[in-house]
Amino acid sequence: MCGIVGLFLKDASLEPELGAMLAGMLGVMCDRGPDSAGFAVYGAGETGQLKLTLRGPAGTVFSGLQSALDEAAGARVAIVARDTHAVITIPATREFAIRTALAQIAPDITVVGVGARMELYKEVGLPSDVAIRFGLDRMAGTHGIGHTRMATESAVTTDGAHPFSTGTDQCLVHNGSLSNHASLRRDLVREGLSFSTDNDSEVAAAYLTSRMREGDSLGEALEHSLKDLDGFYTFVVGTETGFGVLRDPIACKPAVMAETDRYVAFGSEYRALAGLPDIEHARIWEPEPARVYFWDRAA
Amino acid sequence: MTSDPFVFDLAHQTVRDLNAALHALPPGSNETLWRVENPRGLHAIAAGVDADAAIEIGGSVGYYCAGMNKRAAITVRGNAGVGVAENIMSGRVHIKGDTSQAAGATGCGGTLLIDGNASARCGISMKGVDIVVKGSVGHMSAFMAQAGTLTVLGDAGESLGDSIYEARLYVRGAVKSLGADCIEKEMRDEHRAQLFEKLSLAGLAGEVDVSEFRRYGSARTLYHFHIDNLGNY
Image (cartoon, rainbow over all chains, first blue to last red; front, side, top):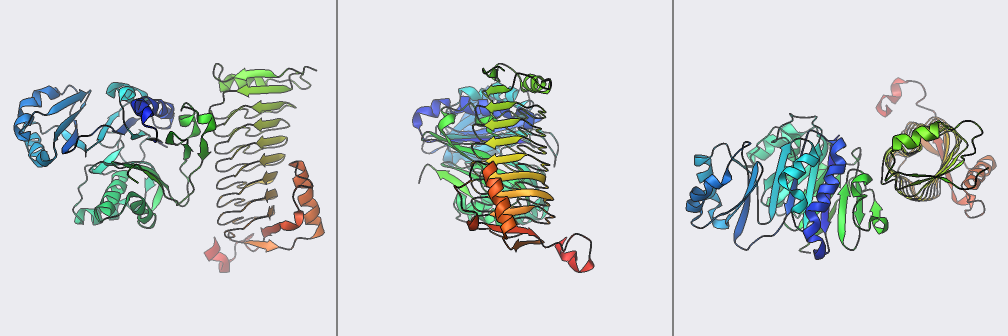
């Protein structure tokens, strides 16, 4: 089944509330996907800096990496630990050095997301518990997406939880199942993309990354996926400045959207949107099949 | 007879309690007016009612609202999720906003009135319900429809009436495409009279000109397996 939520703020005064709003939406979607959950939040960023989201085994003491990271970065690295994850802020030019150092000193730590602004968290467990563990309700940002998973195509693992990130500041959540993911994965591997799971949704994320690498905008990449992806899907996608939604032409997987002067919100069900500010006066609609919707802050 | 509605607030009471109370209404009950507040998109609100009650729901509802309805008149002052009034037997369900997929699915009788748009598969496998949509309907509406009427004042999406049996489809606007074995049919006086009656049920008598509608129904070539039709199955 799975549940998806997404929130894109137009009114900057809501930005401190982003995490709290998203946590509320995610909590309501627990019964669509009680296995595991994840979310990506686009928060503050600094010019010339990159944020790496790391994930380690339970009990990882991320502060123990401080001196090794500082050395690899050639500067003081800010580490913000949240449960099994930590976000480190590094000079953008030192990404390769940091990844190399991490692989050597802490091989059980994985980099799950990279971006100027994106932070990405996911874990196995009841979505509302996962949100509490990472303190989602205290996070600020401009936009975010979240997912509650009921696994069908691959195992219930943290790696199999959404969102999937296959490019800088890019992430995707998916409700549905793809039928041509194996052949598409082979093509994408040939193009040089790498995969960390056998999950079909990761293939969709990598496909969009591949299109955007070739110059597509998020909207164009989603348009292309209508032709190249076969299966059932409702996608919600985030980029550094953008937020997109796409449903397959059959539109089996549910989707409801709401828009006011202050935000655009997505939910698998209206229930997820019912607690948002001034929802009574929002424009509410069901996204049409095979139609790309996207919003961009840079536009 | 009491004139004050029986109020149920779903911010403090559960859908299960609401439905249990509605299901327990004895024949001839005086508790005929019900108001449901704070529905917040919850599922299965007022499903399985079999009573001469008027139930007004003060906001948007989730899946399967008014499912299996018998006799009751249910009004939703908002939008409805998947499968509103699915398998409706009798009575009247009125949605003031839009509905999601499969509105009125498998409905056997009664009336479903949708003031806004209905999305995909409206009236799928309908078996006698009368559905009136003031807006437009999505793709695959009236798929495998067997009996009843679907009246659409707006447009219809792709594959209208795919594999239809005997239901009558009246559409005023554009039809994007017809499904397998669905064809346009002549609009005769009996059909204009029927359409007028259905529009009257929806309170639209005199407001809409029946001559603006086209009728669609079954070509009846897929009823029995025929090897030449293999490509259509």
